[in-house]
Length: 136
Image (cartoon, rainbow, N blue to C red; front, top):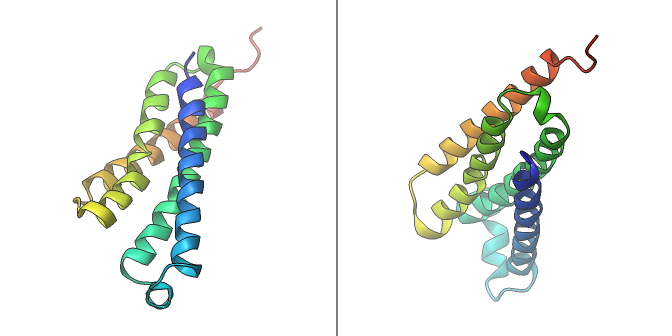
C-alpha cells in the first residue's frame, strides 16, 4: 500500500497547518500586541511563521498527490517506496522552520526536508515519464 501513508499524513499535516493559520490570523487581528506583529510582516518570527504555514500546506498537498499516484502506479514504479519515504521526510522542512521559530533549532531540518521533497518530486516525475502504461 505504498502511498497510503503519504495521503493520510498529508491530510493530517494539512489540517495542522490550516489550524496554524488560524493562530496567525489571531496574532494579526486579535492579539494584544497585534500592531507589533503586523509591523514585523517581512522580518523575523512573523515572516518565518508564514513561510512555515505556506510550505506546510504545499508539502502536505504534495504528499497527498504523490501518495495518490503511488497507490495507482506503485506496481509500475520500481522505487515507489523510496519516493514515498522521501516525500514524507520532506515534511521536515516546514516543521523545521517552526522549530527554528519556537525552539531556536538549527536549519538542518529545513534543508533535509527541502532536499528530500525536491528529490521525491523529481524522482517521481522521471519514473512516470519512463513508465509504460500498456504492455503489449
